Amino acid sequence: MGSIEAPTERIVYHIMYETIRDGKTVIWICLRDTPNTIFSKFSSYELAVSIENVWFVDATITEDKTKAHQASRCNPLDYTCIIMEVVKLLKKYPTSLVMLDNIGILAALDRLDAIVRPLKYLDTIIRAEGGGFVTMLVNKALPGSVESDLLGLIDVIIRVDEKKIHAQVGSKELSIPFCFTGSELILGSVDADKDLQELFSLTPEEKKKLELEVEEKAHLYGGPIG
Image (cartoon, rainbow, N blue to C red; front, top):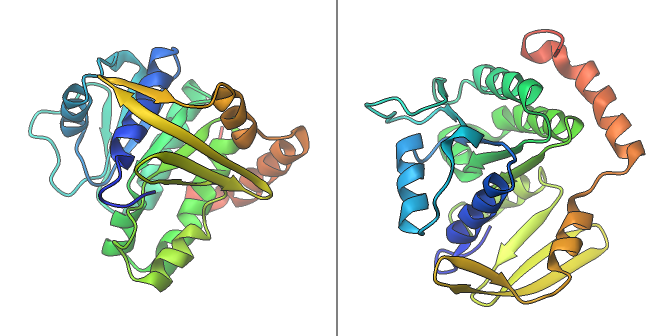
């Protein structure tokens, strides 16, 4: 998350780009931007992505007139459909990075208590499959109490200002300088990649706990997952 002035979105798109370039799969849950708009933004940031490694679950209100490659469609706020589509893709492509674009849209369109359980369950499934969960929430876009409740759903919070990327989980803290050189995102710490990997890693005990949570809650969204 970050302020409107900070290049938060551009950094997120770079993260997605690097993930795709490394041959990993990105599953993009579209709430604000349609798949075609997302491809246009990649182009505007001069990032050439391979569409073979990007899958979309389009839950936007507007929807693309021409359906994008590798995109499934769910009605906005149909959490069961969204979760089941993501689960199908995770079974084909475990360890995928799942992008929710963006969590603030849900808070603006639905009651907070209605989105908590689906988001928690989705996060549990993603991590149990060895994947990662990324979303954006612009500072000051929501009332303080709502923003605070949403942040309570997130284990790792990354904040971006004009010069640094700040991340914190538990007692771990990172503050990494960054800049853009043309279309490249340059991180100022030689250990940045290692630090970020450790920040998001799960211990075997944590992974086992998540797998048990998935089994316990699978009945909420269409029966056993698998």
